[in-house]
Image (cartoon, rainbow, N blue to C red):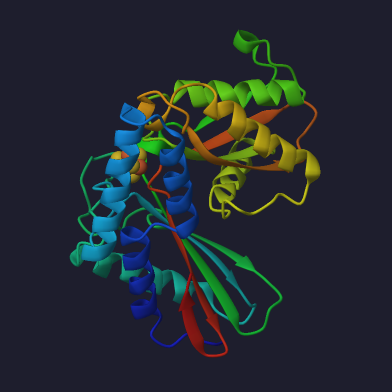
Length: 293
Ligand code: SF4
């Protein structure tokens, strides 16, 4: 079995970068949104404040938001790297990052209410492994998922009577846009939506969350889903909700959708709402080198 030298230190740097610098695609989308808002509007002022916040966090290497969220690691690795070794290293890196204030202590025992103080606990941080065929290349994608936006995730079971949403694509459209309206003023928009059509309750949410870490410029290889992604983003931005729910045109930065087979008896649509602080970064180990993107 192989090991990765200095994995804890590299993972610590991944956490620092993720917590303090937003991805370029999100920053560009926020800037484009600000330019579209009416001069002097609350929407424009909100986006200016968000941009200032992002710049200051990057310059001072401090967290972009006081809620540093749930750390979620998505790891792709060759067969001969032990996952236990990686899990231990990422957990140690999270503990050190908490000591260094890159992360706020966020892990609370769900029964006793006690904060562990170091961001670790039962299933915390969350770490997901996928084996791939590449030799000696490991990709670690970290997402820091804010609690306020996580609360705005939703799962609909079609047919859904209150919206007259049936088990078809029109029903899917209705429930996704319904959740955008429900999240108004609560999930720290503008948002990126991750959606899964189908699956079971657990796989639907897991797949939807993975969608929310796709780069904004990524085009869905499925042309039907690519069109739906575009349509939902456009329609969402015409709802008048705007940044933080203050009104305006910048409600969604993007929509990313996947699908999963389902049993005939169930038709779930799972929606993950990612706030403007869409903190995610990738660390890659290749040919003995480490890089961050
Ligand atoms: S939802 Fe996002 S922006 Fe709002 S407080 Fe939480 S992490 Fe921060």
